[in-house]
Length: 275
Image 1 (cartoon, helix red, strand yellow):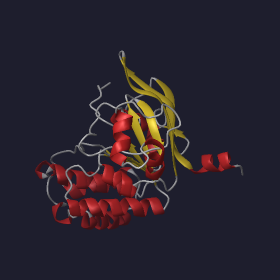
Image 2: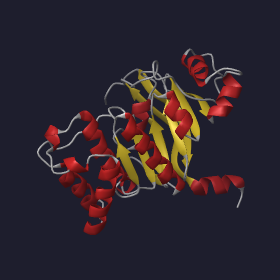
Image 3: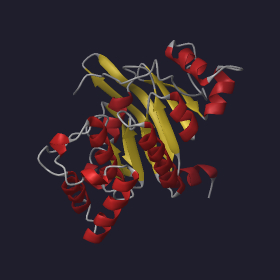
Image 4: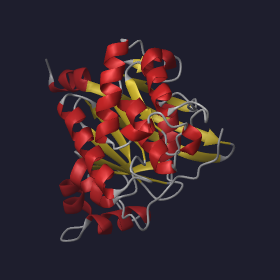
């Protein structure tokens, strides 16, 4: 098998010339990215860079204006139901039915995915203990704090041990102890072959956790590579923060750049228009 064929065989996430326009505004502009089995890719960028719009197209929530996205060879929009069998998804602001208990919500997710009852109970117990909300499983979701909702949503996303995990700002609202546990779980899943698409504005997480970093700027892919490669190529002798400022200010190479991530003080949510 050739190197290209081998790479294709291991690619689980494939974004091909992906674009999204809202009226005259192009939120995502000709974006191509691949994430391999067992790889953690950090998606970074300043406000309005296109991160959340990209994730919504990957999840089949938005249809692309042009180009395409696939998961494990399945089109993310036309085959959305099949794609969801392979994906665990954490939105930035998870929402639940207020008058269901936490445990009921997780069990419902497991049932919808066709998981056996015993496996759902076992996985729910394991994840709730690790994410430190086991004592809240019998509480109604309306009484959950944002941090508790994030923990519940993480359990739902990881319950079925998906081939692909898509996380949008996963540690917002989590305390340092649970954040550390979550990062450990992500590493474990990647070691088992899960492809992880990890959108964050926290530079230290991208550097410690991710194999490669993709930086978006004004909807375009401005830099892509390992943290070390990006530092060497775009900020020799500097820091990842220096790389991010170069990209955010538009001074990074337009194509072929191999570089890293943004600083927590400057990078943030997308704020793109809704479709």
